[in-house]
Length: 439
Image 1 (cartoon, helix red, strand yellow):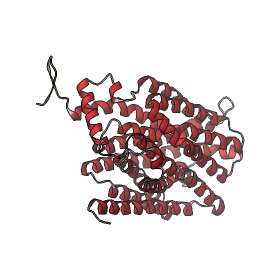
Image 2 (image 1 turned 180 degrees about the vertical axis):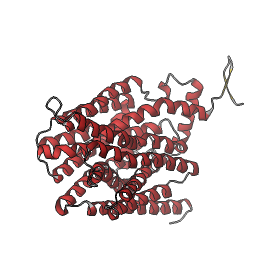
Image 3 (image 1 turned 90 degrees about the vertical axis):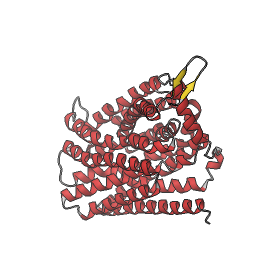
Image 4 (image 1 turned 45 degrees about the horizontal axis):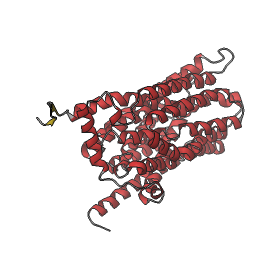
């Protein structure tokens, strides 16, 4: 057995698999829980919509605009936030992000006017900016590329878990607490789902380690193993300055791809409760229970696809194929709208495809970006991509207001997913040509 030697004694080299499992047990559950709460706070407005539009007299267009304006604030502070995280460390900055967005989410309970709705959704995006790309960046400091797809998929399964537990939870709160102490159910939902974000922010500050070297729960030999794996990978990457990232063609192409995928993500996230309620489901709680079906399927599909991608080392076809599966599901959900069982199957297919492509996609930029360039590049891709979070709900809301139907909106989202998949395949061809010395 290989050993690390010292003047005093010989120390057995740590098992790599065991060491990474130890890291995952320490980091992934907490980060996953944070992402569940983050995503729930971001999209629970989709459930609030079932009551608040009537209570406040908002139109579908007002809702679509407010749901999407979150991403305008998100866009403006994304890159600065990730650069600050790179400088001060994940522990303090992720903790600050969670505390801030939790307080803003609680404040959503007191919205009375359209302007207040828009302002608080903008501030929620501003508060949360940097969380997701910050975690993606943080994981690159602990895991090499061949392990990152599975870990990223576990972290990103928080989206599906938020859907699984968030739907029934939000529906139950809105039904059970409606008119309790004079407040509406949607107000209680914002308050009760915002408090955990604030509490978890303080847990992050107390518990998270900024770097491998800070981890007192690792032995010196385990730290050396992890550090050497990251150093070897970093040496093969381009350490580009921040200003050069802004003119890097590959980063902008990846931003466009992610934009197309996010169009589908938030089409599902913000409108799934409405699409299910339109099937004739009266109870908000029952709507929430039914949303568990597509979200559970997505959680399973996301992890299995990422595991297979890591095993084979193939990224592009896994990403493109999943996006096309999502597009097909959206189209079928329209064609089978009058057949409730088939419509739910189609929505489940769409959710699996859309969300499974995301963790594998994030293996593409982290394969060639490092250091401050990685912080800026990941943030740029995520911020540009998440502008689709504004366009997607706005577009579906506008279509529904104009035509009294979401069908055209879902077709458009399927078109964006197909476009993104096509660009991924084209990017694969370009990469293969370059590696073979082609032009």
